[in-house]
Length: 251
Ligand code: 13P
Image (cartoon, rainbow, N blue to C red; front, side, top):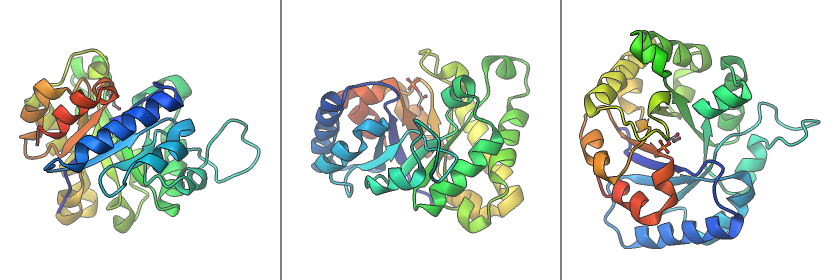
């Protein structure tokens, strides 16, 4: 059966010493906690090795926020999936809307990234979600379906089963404007139906689908109570241990 997961996405925040201190604090807080979900932090590339050193990955999983669409070679400034895996990280966020929007990531590059992540034993946390205009003009279900079909439906059922999905409506990211629990549930049920159509009910039922976008301790419980919402991908609130733990404890 699918897992409940709360994953932090630190984005481009914290220096290495600040990040190590935050990771330690979260790891400590989780040790004694009676948590009902897996907990992961996805941190900047520069932080991975140092953070891996100070956390117990049986308690707190570690991931990167991106990886390259090539294995190795003359790609100055890029960080490959084998490099990420060699730090001890087990997860990688792929297709975040900020990467799609500011760095031109397309379905084609994302297919390469997903393949390389899987080849290197990383679990992709694959992000999808519509922009405000698409929410308002009612095309959001088709937009999200196309994001899944175009980047992921080349995978075998076995490989698809290794993914975690994150629905992040772009209009809710960093805006303080959360999707209502009903909007999230409707979209998550739609996503599960799209998966079932291609890979069957069992694969769909076993896929964890996280919600992301202004998720905080005050709204997490209502979101996570929905049957198709299997946790959260947390931006701003992942940068304060107390807030992040408040969301973890919402399960
Ligand atoms: P916020 O939680 O800051 O809205 O960010 C969500 C997000 O983009 C996580 O990937």
